[in-house]
Each structure stands twice: as structure tokens, then as C-alpha cells.
Image 1 (cartoon, rainbow, N blue to C red):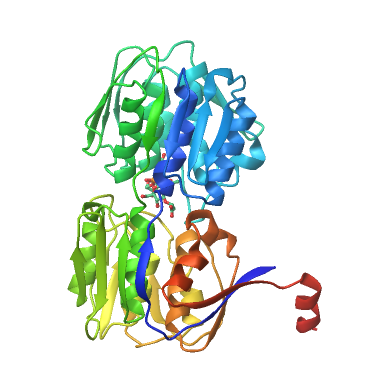
Image 2: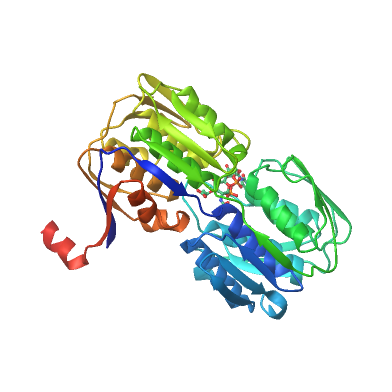
Amino acid sequence: MIKYVIHGGKPLTGTVEISGAKNAALPILAATVLADGPCRVENIPSISDVSICTDILYNLGADVTVVDRHTLMIDPTRVNSFTVPSDLARSMRASYYFIGSLLGRMGQAKMTTPGGCDFGVRPIDQHIKGFEMLGAKWSMDRGMLCFSADSLVGGHVYLDVVSVGATINVMLAAVKARGLTVIENAAREPHIVDLANFLNTIGADIMGAGTDVIKIRGVSYLPGGSYSIIPDQIEAGTYMVAAAATKGDVTLKNVIPKHLESITAKLQEMGVEVEEGDECIRVRYVGELQKANVKTQPHPGFPTDMQPQITTLLCLAKGTSLVTENVFDNRFKYVDELRRMGANITVDGRVAVVEGVGGFQGAPVKAVDLRAGAAMLIAGVVATDRTEIEDIHHIERGYENVLEKFRKLGADIKRIDVPDDMRLAKAL
Ligand code: EPZ
């Protein structure tokens, strides 16, 4: 079993290069299925979710050439299947973006229900509502979601919930639908804008991405093109919090400060110094952290994907803070792991009451999901003794070169493989 071993207690200092955005790369790679010519995609993060995406593209019949570690050339002209392999579909939630792009290209799509982080119920009713509004029919056949459309026709989709995934999937299905599609109550995340920019670069006609009304005028041909993915807002936020938590001084390179505004504002409210540059941001601990209340919201509110990380930081602040998770039903599962390291947090439904405890004790903990794993990393580099993190595959799904990046900032962190028989022997 692979785990991280961390000996913390030292301030993180220096610079860290932020990678391409996972939540932009995944829909953009799925969107290449819509193209009628090759697409060159740059600044792709080298993470396991991207590998799953490329495996799905291979299985659908696309030609995928690895130009370099962060650049892929994808030629979808020989895509000959509309079924997403179940083992790949179940290993991440973003696999469901292939429904929108396969429907758009072939008028058919088939896949099992997607996997992904477990935050309680994660329905796809809004995706289905959008596909039906464009003329698609769907059925469930022995656990497989089957979608088909003789022809997709633009429609008016008013999402009942602000949903990143549904906004993306409807946009993908609408790109080649006949006529105009309007998505109202659309999500406004930076990765929605990035996807729309990519699609327009390869020949689509999309307006309004980044607002709550997105208009897609269907086109019949997408010649393809080149595109570079935006930096990862959540990876950047994670390192910003880690810098503050360890009383450090870290400069992040390759960021878009505007995408980080809600995180910057919250850190400044807590007494952290944050200095913005053109494509960089410097985070410096300058004195005792102050308590703060956090309410997660769709963009431009405070991102739910930063909730475990900011909660970890609030454990180090003076006083009592409230964290309200407004996006998912149950995104506090990691709190039990933080408590093992000395956190004093009480969770009641969507609200966590966080008492400032001033520090963490090292302990063996688990990464219960991707961002919870990031929170364990932060607590581990703060704790002055030894922390072990299991189930680190969650972390490596979404953070490129996470060990190297933390080590470069001064963290004492190792990735070790404990053979199962040794674990058994120790247990006995
Ligand atoms: C995306 O998930 C991200 N995943 C998540 O990031 C992120 O937490 C989330 O957006 C919110 O920003 C990817 O981009 C791969 P939603 P998604 O649809 O699309 C409800 C990470 O850490 N809902 O915006 O699944 C849903 O239950 C991951 O990188 C419906 O009710 O999120 C939730 O309460 C974790 N019906 C709310 O909407 C639907 O049909 C927002 O979910 C769809 C969603």
C-alpha cells in the first residue's frame, strides 16, 4: 500500500508553479470528440484523471498523440464507438462529459453511472433535463445510461440548480445541435469559460460563458485547432492555504489572480498578506490567524473545492469559525480524520463549527477524497511530528507532482510503499 509520510512543522517558503486546471482539462478533452479535425491541447496537468480521459478517447477510436508531458494532439475523425468503457466511466465523475460530446457527434451515447468523490447524493437529473430539451431520449438498461437523438435541436434549458457538470454537458450537446440553445442559471466557473473558449477556437459559436446565460448557436463543422488550458484555481488555492498554515512565504507562478479573488479575500480576512502580480501571487504569514466564517457558493463565491483546505486553516486561527457547505450534501467526511490530528470541529448537517486549536499532532490518517486529501497534506506539513496519509490515489488524481512541489517548498514528505504482508505482520 502506497502512503505519504510527512514530518511537518517547518514554514513553506519559495515558489511553486501551478499546473493546468483539472476541471477545465477533463471537459476539454471530452469535447475533442465533437471536432472534425485534429485538436492540439496544451498545459494539460499530468494527473491520473487525465490518463483516464485519454484512455476513454483511445477506446472510442480517437488517435491520441503525446506531444510532451503537458501537450496532446487528438484526432477524433476515426471515433467509431459511442460506448464509454464502464471501468473507466466509474473511476471519475468527469467521464459523463463524453455523453454530451458523443451525443453531439453521433446522436448516441452509452455509459454506466459515473464515479467520483463521495459527497452524498450527486444526481444527474439536470444533465438529463438538458439533453431531453435538445431532443434526446434516454433509458437505463442494466445499469447503463443510454441516450439517443435522431437529431439534436437547440432549446431553452433553465437549470433548476447551478450545476457545473450540467452546464458543461448541455453546452457540449448543443454545439452541433440545429439552431440556438440558451442555458439559463448556468454555472460561471473559470473552467466553463475555458471550455467555451476552446470550443470557439475549434469552430463553435458560444456566447455568454462566465455569465448565468450561455447561448450556443449550432454549427455543422468543427475544423479543430490549438488551445492552452488555464491554470488550476483550486491547486493554487491549496498552496495559498498551505503557505498560510505553515507560517510561510510562498509565491505561486502561472496563476490568474482574478480566479482566486474569493480565496484571497478570505485569507486577507484571516490576517494573511496576499500580494497579486500579473501571473503570480505571493502569500505571506504575518501574524496570528483570525477566525472567519466561510459559506461555499458557486463561482464567484468561495469554492466548495476549497472547503476542506480552508477549514483546516481555520483550526489554526484564534477563536471559533463557522463553515457552511452550500453546494454538496455531505462534504465534511474528512473532519473525522482531522480530529485524529487534534482538530476540534463539530458538524451539524451543512455547518461545521471550528474551534481554533493552534496546531496539529501527527497521526495516521486517510485521504477520503481529492480535496480532503489536500487538507490532510496541509495538516501534515503543519504538525511538528510524523503524519502518514493512506489512500493517496485520491490526491494524485488532481494534484500534479504534489510531492515534488511540496518538497521544493521545504516540506519533509516521502511516498512509501508498505507491502501488504508487512502491514499484516505489524497488525498481528
Ligand atoms: C464539478 O462537479 C467538479 N468536478 C467538482 O470538483 C466541484 O466540486 C463541483 O463541480 C462544484 O464546483 C469536476 O469538474 C470534474 P455540480 P459536478 O453539478 O459537476 C447538484 C474536485 O474536487 N446537482 O456543480 O458534479 C449536485 O448534487 C471536484 O475537483 C443536481 O442536483 O458538480 C450538487 O449539490 C469535486 N443535479 C450541486 O448540484 C444535477 O444534475 C453542484 O454540483 C447535477 C448537480
